Length: 285
Image (cartoon, helix red, strand yellow):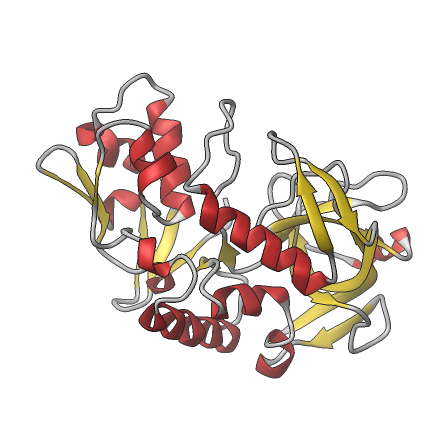
């Protein structure tokens, strides 16, 4: 899989990085012109942009208009591990999740990317320090190179869910699946709290903001559903059908639309996914 390597630095002061997003500034802002994906990377005059770490999803620390969060312990653990991996320490946050202090102020690193998402965030594999090739060049990304990235590290340590999109090549996806399954079996990171496939009883908002960990994509869909004015989840599958997420179920090779196919509501109040996250490959919206 060939990706564009861009050398630069990471910045977190005044920002709210979580376990799968962080700000990045290339050494040469013109390197963004070398990226010819479907979407345009949104950046400022210095080239600074927000990254979305490819193939992973960390639990939410602030989502939506009400800044709803999932249980904060695994969310903060993922964010701290990402920053530590990139070379930051002495992390200080205020009550709004904003970084107010960190050492050093910036950290050198590189990204491997092919595109941005619909919101202009660069989708990237993220590495610390000097990249394996010159900035602005295309690099063949194989499993050994993937293993040097923060994306791989966060899945291997059980601090992020694997969440795959079609642009990721199968060999890289298979490697992330292997380490995710191993982390789950070993009870690492968030996995002992995860009830995505075993089920969570929804009695109110705190069921998923304080009590139980579920796949962040499912959490976001549930919070959006709650915004319609009810915690009654009996209508949630119909809502998911309307959202029309497109994805393939790897175990059956079935391409479908709507997460309602893999989400069940039983007894009117208990929510679960029928397939583990690594069994789904999503199309970019």
